[in-house]
Amino acid sequence: MGKKPAAPKYDVMSVADLEERIAELQAEIETIRQVIAKKQAARGAAAGFFKQ
Image (cartoon, rainbow, N blue to C red; front, side):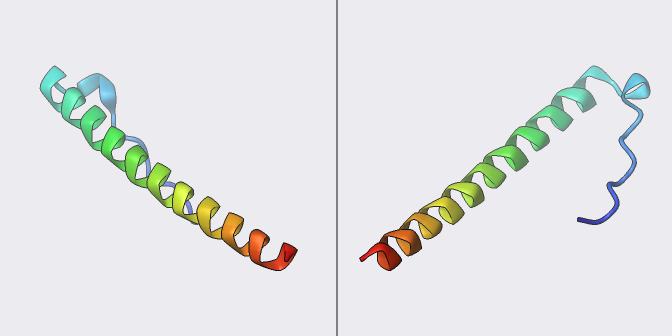
C-alpha cells in the first residue's frame, strides 16, 4: 500500500464539514465492506471448486 495522505486538521473544520467528512468516510467504509464480501465469496467459491 502507498503512503497515506495527511489527515485533515479536524480542529479547524466546522461542525458541518466534520459531519460531511463522517458521511464520506462511512460511504467509503461501506464500499470497502462490499469489496471484502465479494472477495470472500469468490474465495469461498474457489475453495469449494477445488475441494471436489
